[in-house]
Structures are given as structure tokens and as C-alpha cells.
Image (cartoon, rainbow over all chains, first blue to last red):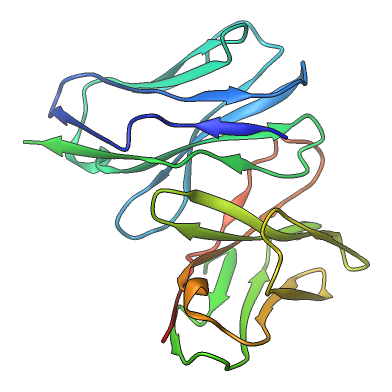
Length: 114
Length: 114
């Protein structure tokens, strides 16, 4: 079974600074997808960024980028120029190639200090 | 209007009561999911359905049942609620073509079992 681990329950960053959230996963599959979801206090789940395992290039979405290390089974999220609105719970998630289901990590609570 | 809706948004009930959480979507997606979120555990899959005639157990299905009344509707029932079912419940949908299709989440239902 696949597992996803986020070893940082809480992180904090100063506004305008950069922060990196860590995620590791375990799978025996060679082709799969990885995601980062954001959950603000409104509790809505919002997709931040996604990565296909067969693509070597790291995904980027504006201020959000990932460092995907397939051999190490690591998938970290970098937030540049942090903004107050980035404060949220962040979840890393894994999906197999057929997209049948998501497996989530435990979450990292990010605080952005003004 | 929201694409994925959940009712009720909040519910307080007593141990032993039967309760149903409802999910509706207007995205025309075939795949629907029920997750439960607990602090420190992330989101865990309860049940999922790929079409009206297809129901599958997730990793924590004990104590829950589901009904897929139509393509657009997927309900989760707790036959006899117990306090450790107190959690935040999410419904999600995806088109089902592949994992790259984003899972769209409802706003969540906060359930408290006394």
C-alpha cells in the first residue's frame, strides 16, 4: 500500500520569504501522480500544484514550485514570496496512474508572520 | 453556485443515532469519493464510486455505508454513530479519465457525535 508522510506538523515563515514543505512517499509503482492541496481556515480543499512521475521537469505554478526526487521518493513544495493568504494547512497526496484514489499525508500547518 | 455541495455543513448528534451526509455535484463527473479528516491524520478514504453501479470500500469503511443514488449524488451513512466518528467529512469528484484529473472537493461537513 502506498503511504505519504509529512514530517513537519507546523512551519512558519516571514512574509515575503521562502519556505519549503517536505513530503515523502512510498510506492512500488513507476508511474503515478503527486499533488499538493491547500486548506485555509475556510476548510475548502484547493489544489495548489501537481506532478506526473514520468515527467522529469519540476512543476511550477506562479510562486509555488516542487522539487520532485523520484529515486528518493521525495516531493517538497516551495513557496516563494510568502503572502499572508498562504497561511493554511498543506497536504501532500499520491494517486496511482489510474487515478482511482488519493492517499494523503498528515498535513503541515503553515503560519505566515507579517 | 458551488460545483460540489454537501449537506449539512455542520451536525451535532448523539451516540447511537443514524445520520446521513449528502453530496451532490454538477460537474458531470463519474467518480465520487468520501473522505474523513482528523487532526494529525490527514484525509482518509472511506468509500468511493466509479459509477452508479460501482461501490468500493476505502481504508476506513467500518461503521459507514454509502449509496450512489444517481451520477450526481453520493450519500454517506453512519448507521449507529459513535464519538470516534467525530470528524470533518469531505466529498470529492473527478472526471475519471486519469489521475491527472483534479479531484474537486465539497466544502466539508463538520460532524460531532456526543
